[in-house]
Picture: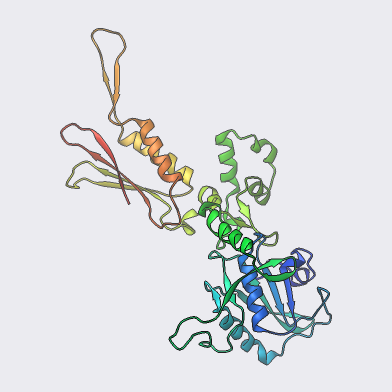
Length: 351
């Protein structure tokens, strides 16, 4: 794990708010697990927090020089932190790193807001792995939801619990930050091209903005200031390689000229969603949609008939691409089936 900032600046609270930093002189299972649980719940959506183990604090300020931890205890404490985290439900394991401050070893635990929140933890952490089970093997330890209020870890009130459940269920997948991606995975040129194509006035005012600035204006990045992340929707529309983060985020077009499947053709479209839509529509229009012109004897205007209305195809495909849940790892598959007797096309859906 690499902390995305200078440790000294983090410790002094220059970039990260002090309420997101917890200093502990020694390892103590109960407050440690409660604080990890609270940061993971991230009730204010501010990016979780950081816990330093081996630093004594006086009125919220680290006492210098740092006392640190005994070198021969570092591995033992890390294992104990992971063991204790198994008493958080659902399971949450933070990132743990050994850092050196004032030439002393310190454990730095980084806790990001969890995807499976809300989390609850044992009020009293068992000393042994199976101490929390009764004679029948069932859970017998009371658990509580913990949250951060200012620089304190507290038990969530019933109202806070409702808010935690609301947070976990109200954020659509598209609007969630992708923790596996970086802002650099977005394409500045694709963002500008989208603004050009849509005739957005943002382009004029943002023509000289950096990748971060334009992404912020488009509201497709989110997170704590020390580590902004692109939202899923940003990666899907403006990512350099969306398929790197979303398996099967592609459109598959199938042409079935005969019911028995002979002569079947397949074509796959990948890339940003709006590019997939344009390329798929262009292919359908060029290869499969045909116009028949019928001259009528009683009037000068000809009758124009399409084998399948393009507007209908456009509506169906746009809805399929933009309204699909990309949390489900399945491609969008559309098939044109030709009816032998009439030559009509039927647009069918697979997968």
